[in-house]
Amino acid sequence: MVKTLQSHTQGRGKKMAIVVSRFNDFVTKRLLEGCLQELERCGVEEKNITVVWVPGSYEIPLTALTLAKKKNIDAVICLGAVIRGETFHFELIARAAAEGILQASLLSGKPVIFGVLTTDTVAQAYKRSEKKGDNKGRDAAGSALQMIELLSQIKKN
Image (cartoon, rainbow, N blue to C red; front, side, top):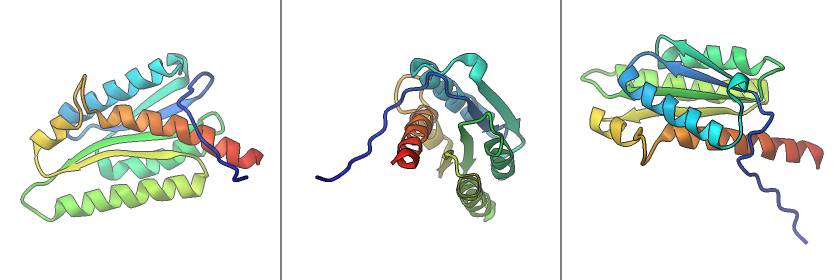
């Protein structure tokens, strides 16, 4: 019989950090709201959530790694919004954020979740940060909780 490991979004007792970009905060505040609502819905207590604001998405990875290395943090959720402009800057920041967040996860051995929107337009960013509909901050919270449990199961087996 095949051994199957599955995870759920149970947050009771979990300690979470959220790193949020101030740049494009008209979007990132919406992502954060969705993220916090999902964590609360899943049982994460407010006292077990640390929110850290950074200047922009480029600064997310270092902050995420620093938090992930802390013993009292189970996972880090990274929220940002990189919206295409008229220059190559979009590609540089989007790539640096994605690669840096991946490295933070690999170096810490903990879930460091990519919740950074990379969109062509503000309208696309709004569509992915809706209060009642699609909200990638909400999705990132669920992914973080699932990964905490899944990695815990893998370590036990």
